[in-house]
Image (cartoon, rainbow, N blue to C red; front, side, top):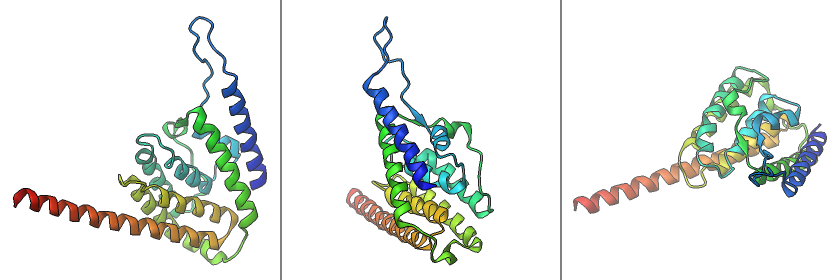
Length: 217
């Protein structure tokens, strides 16, 4: 299944790249009339699977794209997915505002190629093992974990989205492939995100106290 998704994504990436190289222009204005944008709804249709793990993974990857405010905006939806995950829902309906979230032509091609690469590597490396970590009884804890990672993504930390997003991508893949080792790696990445958040918080407090002492001294 993952290889078929990878092939579908790669074909879509090549199609977008060909469109970008041969734009259609308006004869009167000379402007490009082709909307080379990929929305999240389009990306889900390419997957052919609107399951909760897929959506968690895709939204997490969206937070890594350098679009102003994207991580802050998407983090609310990721937290809501954590609640759905804890309740045992296998699929959720994508809100219209979220489904319209789109990428420009450059990031469309990059994202499609990147996702195809992820699925190819997942098909090679991931397999059912250590399934106790993927048991239904752990679902509520993973739902809380998703909400926690969303909270870290929400915070305005320099490069603060990287580790929590990586954790959620590994969580989505581990759940899809029933791979407990990938779920443990998700926990390790998330622990790194927590450590980074705490360290940055301590640094910010320390600098704030020193600044206050300097101004009042």
